[in-house]
Image 1: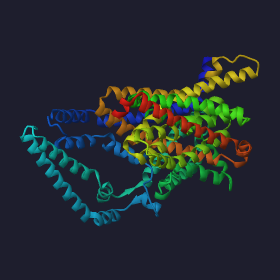
Image 2: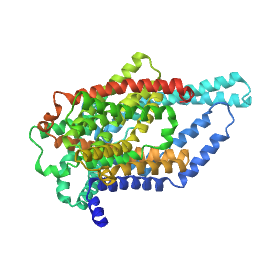
Image 3: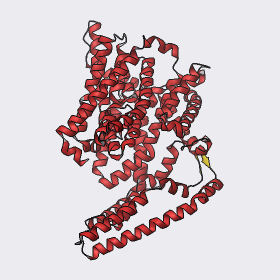
Length: 566
């Protein structure tokens, strides 16, 4: 019997997701670790020793030069990291001609550099003059042994002017350094990587590799189009990204000309999402979660379960939604973290495919709206950045939308929002387990029998173990590597150059697959007078009010000292 159970598990999507997600994370870690090991660590130690040896009461010009050297040691800037980032990156931004984001010839690059050369030369000269003035002011302060407050102040102000200039005009520097590129070749390599990984996994599950590969050509091609459309400047500005395009175009095809039969073998939406969620686990590092401390934990871990249970109760008792699984999936989608929680919860309660599709659709619509509206409301109310960031992190569903909305308010709000969303993401596994227990027990009572833990384990989405395992593994690596190496290897290496980009592509493939496999006729019966929409609206309204209240209490009344240190 144990052998049979093991064999059955090897044919599941969860096993395939665990296998592919593990390969992606470990291969990225290995490639970047090998490329950075040894010389990078030595350079970091030397630079840190130089920075630590300074005795000035302010950061000197030399200190900032050393800081800039540290940044050049990031994993994504090594030869391996640069290649991985180009290989997995999405198309660039564009306004009127999408082809410009896919390739640029040497002649065009030369022309663009020439167009800004005079302006860039002027900028470079001004920057050099400011740096020289900052160095001179710093030297005067040093000669006085930093005992003259006036000289120290003058040096500090001169250095700040230099750094402000150095941090400005990023678009000008980018244009002055523009190089020819061709994205088509990298996309071909990326498509081949996905065919090898997912086609091989499907072969292990008992499906034909060739059938998957042929259908995947169409799915991947449509995903490329959606990524391209998502990079259009005007659409991107209003939050209409690749996810919305993927669902929309997929639905348009499936509900008009119909999805071709030869494509359907590649519409493994849940496998794509589950693999992406395992990769997401590597980005949830315990050290960063703890940086916000107890206020963030209260906002994420107290409010979220309350909103989830209240919304589910409201759907059952007030709206009287017939499908408990639809009710639960929407409630988890809205209260925890959107698509990720919806997939895990749907798997735990055996929700139908069209119920998951509806929950994801609602999430995408309101995420796009809230990403734009909520920062405007926060600015209008004059809320502090910490409070605004906490509000955004606890209420907007998708992590990418949280980051974008937080950036509207400032760096502090962005960091708080992203960290609270990370803390909230940890609940995915806990919620999935709780839902599996609840629904297995509930069905057992309905059948007049006692469902044991074996049924709970059967329902529990096993890919969540990969999500948790990735988080633990990368947190341990991060904590044991030292701050500089960990940042260069994990934040600006494995995640920035490899896993984060692949996760975005996997979600895009999943949304395309969902659209192509969904028919409006299947969804019509679930609307039931608009009850799912009412459920989402009421639940989100409650979520907004409770999150804002909890964030204010925790950050400004209970733990004000933590807020001051952020």
